[in-house]
Length: 435
Image 1: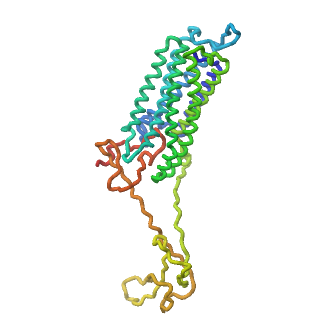
Image 2: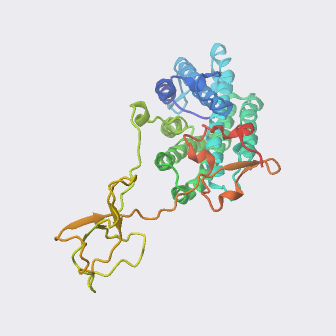
Image 3: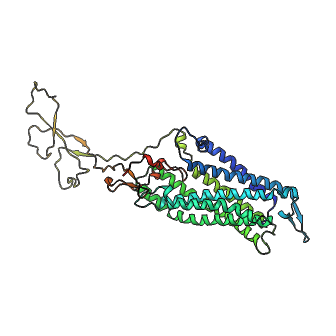
């Protein structure tokens, strides 16, 4: 029998409404609601991103509907004074018939919204785990074990949450308690599992950097890592208070729910944690790039190799030995007079250049005068070959071409990584070359 005053549920309805408005504003700023349209004139992100977008929007819509309507019922029913003189909110079983008929539909709306919320957070957990578990063979997301795990988890969430509410519908207070208990248990389990992903995130980012990922991808991964740390903290602030409140409601004498302080305190902490973590998830699923929105482009500027200055009239000595490595060696260049110059030659009478020993000062046609010149030879940099991926029909996975040698192991998803739900067009298998 979860308690809670009308004021606690009023906070839930206010937070849900404000966050729903922020969600609409963010999606408009993100891509003008293009992610919600089935047919797009530009880049096709695929049905998976649209499904996740609709799921997230359904979560917020259900929470707003439940929060506003349940708060209205709570204020209409008010409080009851116990024989001990304490004042407590009226239990759901003692609601008037006009309001009582709306309680079960609202609890079903809450269970559906919570199921959609579990779908989004389970997808984020499995996709990060999918990227971190990449081995020598580059796997496809829709062919991976992580995707199948998410698919089964989605079915259990979408069926299990409403089914729990429907089975326990005989007693409305217990029905509310069991709905909160199952939902908070699943949310806590998902958050605990995500701690494993967070523990591997620094090594994962370092591996992506070592594989020469684009700077924008690395910066986005670092930003998502920091956001996920805060998201998990608020996820625990959301699930643990509701777990304690619901566990007390399904067994025992309900000391927490009968208190005048703990039900409101736990509900308020849970509401703040729920919507703050959902806001962070929104920023991860639909990340805005102010650099692109303002028309700027990031350019990586490599440092140029240093040049050396030498004195051509100074002979080499022990204090200034010649460089041992030929890569960064400074080459002295001397101009020599042409001995077979003819004005009738068809070739251009351009000066000739040759390498010469500066210690030979007896050469009659060597240059005179004391001057310094700079010569630069670019270092020998091994240019990485562009790496191609070939789709293996037998193993149903992407593998690196054998002719590439030891190329980068960077996953194709990470080359154009934007968010955990924005799967790139590498899934279009017909466009991939066959082995």
